[in-house]
Length: 441
Image (cartoon, rainbow, N blue to C red):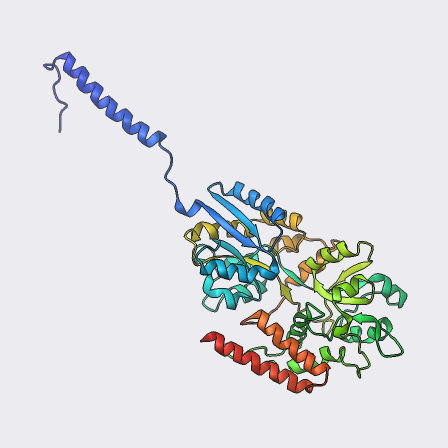
């Protein structure tokens, strides 16, 4: 058994010096481990930049709240105009001067995917995505391998906006629930002059994107509601003009849409000469438009006394509920040197129910988080848009802007008689198939 050394023969002065020396070492070790600052975790630290299309003042107040929950992260936000956003972002990334975090439209992921660093599965996987958000988020922002490329702060859907005063004058009690009911009320809400000019339109439907900003969105919704096979399973070809075994076809939807813009049709109610559909609606010259919740603020600003109401989108039947989304998600640049803290910021901002609810209050945009959607009461003006988020569906668009142009040309060719409806739609299908083929190379 080891014994303690005998210190009785060592002079007291030496004992004091040795003891002081060892005491100093022990004290220094204790101070080092007890008082030194904790090690910095690079995954929770970082000064980040974010670009987006949402209002800078609203985003600043929201970001400040998120930062208080993540004290190691600081985010500087830059608002970019929607019209120039794409070009500005592409130029900045090409020059190596892009943001760490940027917003990407739900219809733009295939075109932007090469610029994005997806989430690590250990950070946030598909099971959590399904827990927090409606199914359409996975449909649009995750791939078949389970990689997630964006998380949304809000989720907007196409709505029926109508002029209550014009409905009252026509003796129509409320908005149509189905497309057949919609078609029936068109003659009552439409007014045509002796020369055939439309004096009052029942609805902005049947025109191209030159006069109706949501023309292609509405057409796509009609196709999806009708069960059209929008693309092949491998996403290499467009198939919307084909008939499915269940009878679904984009042709029926295209025919339905274009008849409202065809002069010989009994429900003719719109042409591009009507001008911008929003301007026509705010001027009281159009009874119904199909647009998103965020458009309501613009309309209210232009026409504060307009008796506008928002209603759910018409369906093919009273038992169906299929709606069409449009929103922007937050994502992380592949060029960013702070990808993990950037994604940590996005996860916190989009999935924390308190923060998400505060964003909802500040932005007035329909929430994307399931927990908030479930808490909105039926009496709320937000009940319709938030519930529609749960049944929103979309399709794989390799380039939203180019596809808009293709469909818009098809509508124009059909309603002006330059091509039959079947030929115009088949041309659009072939052009989109070619776009999908070239973009995959």
